[in-house]
Image 1 (spheres, rainbow, N blue to C red):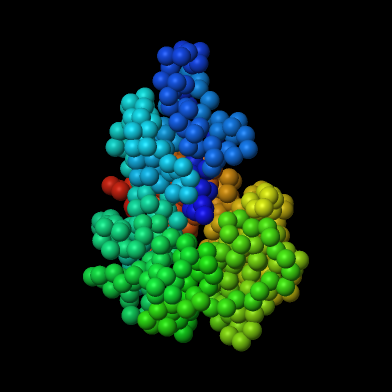
Image 2 (tube, helix red, strand yellow; image 1 turned 120 degrees about the vertical axis):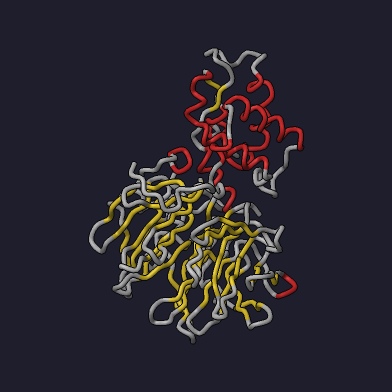
Length: 437
């Protein structure tokens, strides 16, 4: 099963980039290494995933004059990263040989004369963000494990240190102060010294694990295989109601649990792929679908505002065929409201929603930017200092820390909001430095 965390984010990064071979406007000469060697390799290993229907969708392979290539060095740096760490192509797709990977990455590096600054970000994809009780910031990445910033330095925890997987899609902290990390391979509990791992033998199965620690201290997990609860020793599958109608359209895997959320009244909400949303009041479930007012049955994010409205972020469907749906929905307990008049908030993929301490709602509008809603007005922010890493605005995660700083995990790295725009956070700095663009 293709993991969306790779498919979606890499697609965003390369969808419109252009490549080139030589200074000559006629880049089709047989002596051009791009046309002769590099392009066929990229077509062979990219097309199946990113352009299964039409190679024209891979316009980043269209060779043009050499002077164009510097415009897209961020894109090519990302391609090098993903090929070198073997995150691309995804594991479920045919893989290049080691020699083929070296040919592609060597050509890009030498053509662009890439240097360490081109790769200076905490990770290519930051898909989760969390602040623990001590004020440490944790960031889940798609290939580098969990990154922790303690206010002074950045450290990583990966499979090398004992983490069960390097794609960290969920982070939580239990009442004892243990950190929990959900991955594509299971879950890990970290007590500050060592890891305890949970997978199929401990009752937990499925990729894309994310968590909810409810007010009773119960740990819930959601994966591609459904909902699970932790009893202190192991996980067990939690039975969800079966759909009352035939629901086929979905984004990744029908029944995948995208999100878990507990509202102020203690209800637990589940956002599912292809099956809408469920509200559990401790006794019974209430089911919400497109027929009730959702924009799609693929619910990726759920939050609550200060007026106790419930907000849903929904996604388009890719299977069994593409359906341009998705968007932002507000539910006041009786009525569902959509926002077709706001660019990017209807017929679009909304992966991330977040409620700040002040009650503002942040919305990641794919391909448009990030909106802040103050209860009356949607304000769009779409300026960054690394536009080629964020130009498609694949917002994967959002966090407000205890100091009020807003952090955004993009398909492109970690960014900090300075009140006006988004500033890339590198491994070596810019954690607190203010800079207006």
